[in-house]
Length: 468
Image (cartoon, helix red, strand yellow):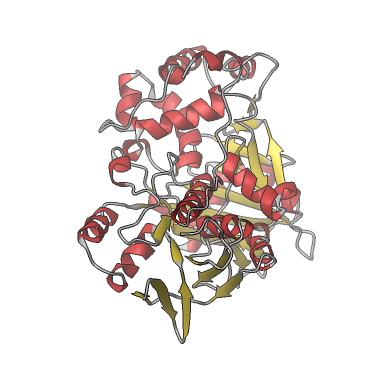
């Protein structure tokens, strides 16, 4: 096999974050990329659309990133979207009644860089702070290996109180991992806290998109096309077969022939496609493993008021069902034709809300929002929308790593990508991009073309450099 990518065609199935990352990397390396996406838009679960009931463009759910998401940031730079992220080193915790506490870094070296603001946070008592510090100390020296212990058990073992769990551990983990503590692997809980709070101020910065998600990721399409590739929307793959050493994929009346294939699909979509792929012992094992993955939902409540209810760009709301607030009017300039201001409220791991009616959720959100911002009682609600992303993320349960596959698939010439494969990250956009880059590297290596796309992690800084 030649090391020259010229003349080699790669079909990427799936236009979500993983597929876009794989397609961009391979196109830049000189491969002819054919990206197939069953929907009429790219981005997958990180997309936006015009809501039919409001006429407003909304995201399917709020997505954020951290400074430690090196590969996601690399993709943004690659496609020219890096300037469309709002970065903040500050987290506002708001209690019912409106009292605010702020966590932000100081000039102290890591892991002490947020200690001053943490010690001054009014939402935690002195006892809370001692208890939380004792828990974080358990993650200071290393990231524990995956085990059968879930994070709820870990919290109990480290004598965390119901109050510290409700006000500190859960708000952070729910937003980062979208799951309840009893279903979270301790390894990934530790990874979140080490990188977001301990490694460095840079790693813990929060990034929020300033444009709708489809606009943010849509720039990947011209990036691929300008490098000789093609993007085919509404192309749902129904059959995959190998003929004379090349792969032929059928999507409706179209057929796509290529030298290699990247299946950048969610685990449930891959499971659905499995009957169309050759069957062997390894594929049977993969099929059985896919059955062990599960989902966790996210619910977003979009509210448009006749006035501004807060000048904060974002905040964590404590002791209520709604967990995070994002000020879309400040972040994305969302102002209705009659001057209304847009707020998005996010409830992660929202299993209890999935079966609730739209109006019930809106009423609940308004009632709770009034506890933080009394002006809501006087404001007029112009319109509202509720989005439920039932398959928002996979559930990062204990011991799941033992069955997460790598980029290599059971079929030579076909490679896997998706946030659920073995990237070393939980279900995040960072994991999706890493998986796409990993698949692109595997394709290039198979053709004898040494390539490196995965960006290294941010190194620990300050005193954290003393710990592995």
